[in-house]
Image (tube, rainbow, N blue to C red; front, side, top):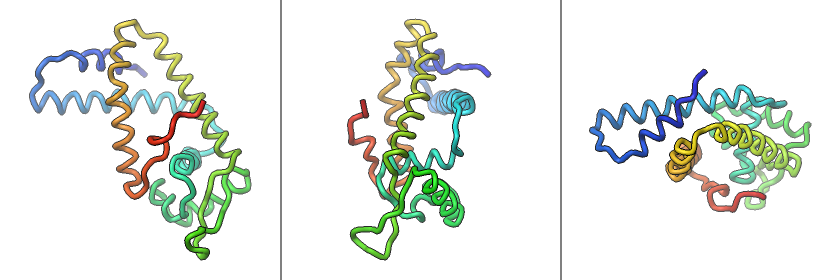
Amino acid sequence: MYFTIPAMLLSMSRSTPVGRRGQEDNSVRSADALWGLMSSVIQRTPRDVSLTSAATLSALSRTGPRRITDLAAIAGVTQPSLTVLVSTLERAGLVERRSDPADKRVVLVAITAAGSDYVHTRRRNSVQAFARLIDQLSTDEAAALAAAIPALEHLRELDDEHRDPDQPSRERNAPEPA
């Protein structure tokens, strides 16, 4: 697999006028490069839970306790499937079920300290994998990537809003853990 993101970002950072078709081509190229990079790193990252489990833990870490129906919608799976997944995560000590203080009939799923530690460790390991790749870039490529950070952060915010429009992301509003 090849990584084209640094060269592509470098060319995008130049201030040359681009027509609408060129913008679409750059959008597709950017998306393809980001997808390829993310897919490659995700596939190489060792894990002991499924991607859906990891995504569910991440969502709980970002947004706080949620109803199973909300989590199922965010994960794009059925409610019965997520109920089974939550039971598995609960047995592993990564989540717990709580009653909703606003409505005692409602059960919320909350991440535990062990689940939070798992999410943070997994994120740190993934960030380190990316950092090792970035360290291999030339100075100009690293600078182009650094210049793209605001756009990449905005993409993440847009994705968070698209994935869960009713819940603001605490991760966007809270400082990064040390």
